[in-house]
Image (cartoon, rainbow, N blue to C red; front, side, top):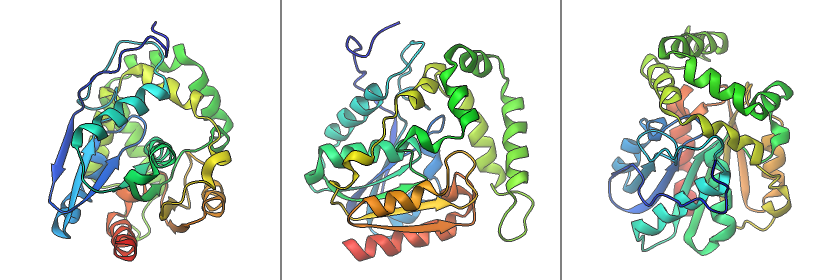
Length: 274
């Protein structure tokens, strides 16, 4: 197993670009892919923005180095190299979900002049946000790898469907997630490198530097989130000097379970800062 210090970061990343105008960077969460943003990317293009959505290291169609344990600095360095390769001529808006929210926060902290604003969707910024059972699960690296490698796609799909029904929808529909999103979610789980599940163990508490992030920020979360504690998101808003918070009647993926409302919030925010 390679350590964090001797790991050679791959130089390629799978991504899609749509539209022209001010750049908007879309960063998915753990065990997901750029398809998380399929409902937002065309809307950004229609409204005069250039969207860039990538697969993070170990996800989707981006490189998947063979390692028992991925490190969060690998993910961030791979992302930063990709950002550099885009050769953007103006600061970008970063939209990140869960782990992608952590990456967006870290990028804004390190490169404030390159960051025009942040949209943080159910952002992961401290291990204390995780329920105790999930915290223990991510700590068991071997167990997580066995589960991921031996669980067939059809069983992942059943788990996704059960979770979607359990959440329900604010409109009264049976599922919280549309069928095509549930299918993509199951596929993305099976395409994720097992070593990626080590990353939550490395997320440090970002609270100590949040007050230094001056980028205008919108924080959006689902008030029925079972993955990260919903009461952690208002606390994040309070710690950031230029942040506003909005909740949606949803779970951990409000940008997918209520894409219309989420997109409305995003464009309202973008119009206010640009």
